[in-house]
Length: 515
Image (cartoon, rainbow, N blue to C red):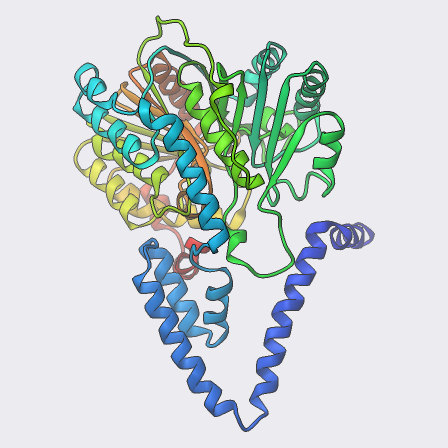
């Protein structure tokens, strides 16, 4: 009992607890005002107003460019919880932008186009060298995100976060001009302390060091004054989308990207955050299986531009990127690399489109690792159609979940996929956090995009698409090794699930776009 009270007290006095209390008070205030209104002679009139408002909100939702599953969930909330539902949608639903954020978004897009647009167009060459499918996938990213295809880029794949720890520190120690870091979660511990120590030394030596982290991602791991602490060390720091004690749709959009960029020459990305569970120093949910990829060469410039555009966005300033441009990399790398990024405000679901492109172009096999399998109709149909067409489709999910509710939603999709011929495995030693696709020994992607609604429609994300690089074989070998440590999901087990649990899943799936 004492431990429980102690935890409750700690939470209440933490910034996250204080914010939660203030938001709950705001909700209570709305509810109290509506209940008070019921006792007045004006309530019948307001009832009609609320009904009209709910209908208008539903029309707005239907006419929006949101995902259909997202629309259905909100329509049920709006009409089923009048008038609270329409109020909730107006406060936290959709993806509307203020005029201020629209200007900042345009500035971000302009900077990316200015610095990367002239390098686009290599997709035609890729189509000749690798195949038309590769050219089509590359062309999509060139046209929607101004993300070019690059040669002259060496890649190295890490099956575990533990494996890249020494390489990260070595790369940071070798920095000569600048270090850029952007992560969803930063937490004090062995990993971040080792990195921060190098950053402090480099900043003292006159090297430009910048850090971006997401406020909600790090709210339980860093104090609110952490940027000021880093600034005292000479490390420039920005916090993405500060949590405010008000209901706001802006809180839906988080910076889920993972970048570590050194001199525009070397970069790391993948599923790994700057926290000790990602390198299995701090045990959580069994063994933590994650992955990362290291790029060295011309393609790092694309990631550098993506970081700088986000830095300018968080500061609402505009700077020239030319001073950060690296020297051209030496040749000799095999295959092609295309880093990409996704912004939730441009009505272009880049992460989902990359995944759909890979699914539809698979001819022999498609291997996927993902921490969550909360998929919409389009992805479900693509996966089942691929399996029914004879493609060997395999998916590995966690056996020990980090979020039990999301894990239930993940399992709710198993039967439909398994019946179609998709092979599903759960990683028995613990939690798998890597977000990888491998196709036909030709293509692969490693990045931050989960197979869930938040990653594909609400978060800022990034990844790397690989075309015929040696790394593709490494990712495939890692998948098969991971599969050997995983439990197969059988159709018999899926069909043994109780009707009550199926009913619970059906109810949960109404709201899965909001989870």
